[in-house]
Image (cartoon, rainbow, N blue to C red):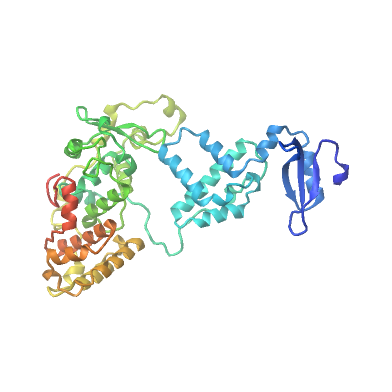
Length: 474
């Protein structure tokens, strides 16, 4: 059948241009617009006239609502998804919106049924890291599902996209749980500055985002219960008993100014980047590999597994959905059962570390290869070679830029460096982030050399937090 044979009311097929692979456009008459001109709904463009005619015949029985949905844009489908998923956590919703805006901008005004696999691949390629690429792919899969529920015609391409894998040469290990020895090191040095951050995350299982948003009104010191959680419906505002190990830390945080349990020292919320930095500086001397705050959550779950805690109790503490429908709708975990599980977590056992030295079995061999005449530059080079597990590419580049600012002291013997000399060079670094990283490196050298530099940058930060110093009791 040709376009001249179409029945009345079926629509029309027009030839657009020979300079396109799909020159035949199928459209249906909608009426006149406000200017009195005819208005059409485009059903699509096709390679041959026969294809366009067949589409019009297939759509002959469609209602106006069917036509409206067929012409929904990527933006409209995304807005429909957001509007019908008000059960999403605020952080998840913010992440979805940011991902759509930054990586799917070129798709927003396209009809959803016109989005092809190559368009989706291009959106994923815009992301720089594996984690973000996976988030983009997840969003595309969710919108494909939403389009299926809306009965939007077309093929669902997201399900056929290749899995997002790490780049070749990426040797970063998967997230690991802390070993028993590592946890014993943390307990032994629990009163060192910022170690309370590590222990709180390990003994509660909260994500760092949840830790930063816990309000003091949700901490019950009488019954030693903290209520918090983000991200999932099962995890929001869940109750977690406070282990005796971290109870002194929780009481101290409750006495700090501000409405949140964790603050920046002046009563305001602690930023994610600050928590990450302080976490790394607390953990670095005792863990001989790459580390991130989420390892605390892995450690929490692993310890519960080792203690043979019931699966429903573990899910309730972690904020995970129960495995079966019966458990989700009918099982209620009492706070007593949760407390029994929490008490299965780590207790201090000095015998595990006996004879292992100040930092367990970690030895600063890179320092032993140097004598008292070693310069700052020699120590820096040795440290980079000996500690690749502690330095990401991003952190290494920041160190390199910092070294340019410290060139006046690079060739001076480290043991002859004074606080004033280091402070003078640190003032040339504009970024507090880089200053903190550089101070971390100097503290690493101090620990190995048995020295103690007191930096003005550290002192200012400590004064803001109430005058606490490394080694003080929290």
